[in-house]
Amino acid sequence: MTDVAKNKNKNSKNEKPRSPGVLKITQSILAGAFGVQSNKNRQEDFSSHSPAPYIVAGLIFTGLFVGGLILVVNLVLSGQ
Image 1 (cartoon, rainbow, N blue to C red):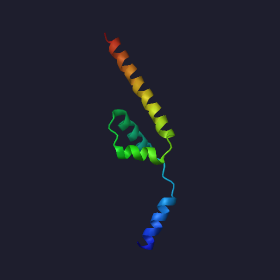
Image 2: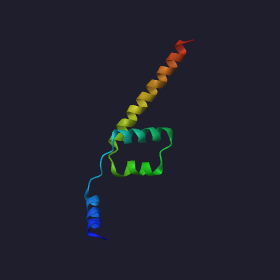
Image 3: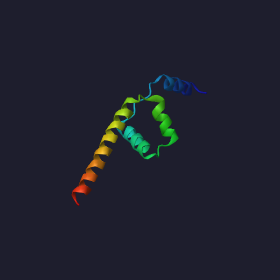
Image 4: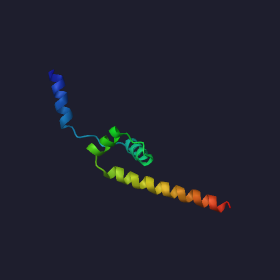
């Protein structure tokens, strides 16, 4: 192994994992909600990141989903 490759391996071990972006969290929440999350992505989500952003995003998604269902039901019932 070359010196450059050894240094790259050392640097990658010492670096903190980057926190996931909004798009990554949204993708994970939506995929998990619809049951199509790949095992690889699920492992990435649970391995190196704090669960807090996923919990907050999940609660927001759940609130929006339930609110949307209530809105649709009210619209359907008011049309009768």
